[in-house]
Amino acid sequence: MMFLSVPAILLSTSFIAVLARRDPKRLRNLASAHARFSPSPLSARVRRLLGVLVPVPGVALMLLGAWWAFLVWLGALCIAGWIASRALAIHTG
Image (cartoon, rainbow, N blue to C red; front, side, top):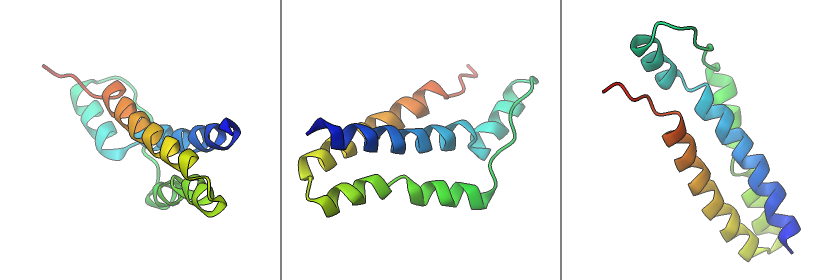
């Protein structure tokens, strides 16, 4: 039954990665800390859309009654968010 949780994890993690990579606050701090080129932030509309799309696979798992897959998805999403925030952290000291 692993086939339910893996696609949900990959889909939600990809949305989190896009949100983390193009976060306006992180990019603003990056521009002030380093003078090199940085990508432009996502528009508010796109950020909201991605934010709404992140939990959709989890809701689908709940509606299917795959509670174990939902818990695996939830744990993996927490870890993915933590890894994304640590990997893209700006170390200025």
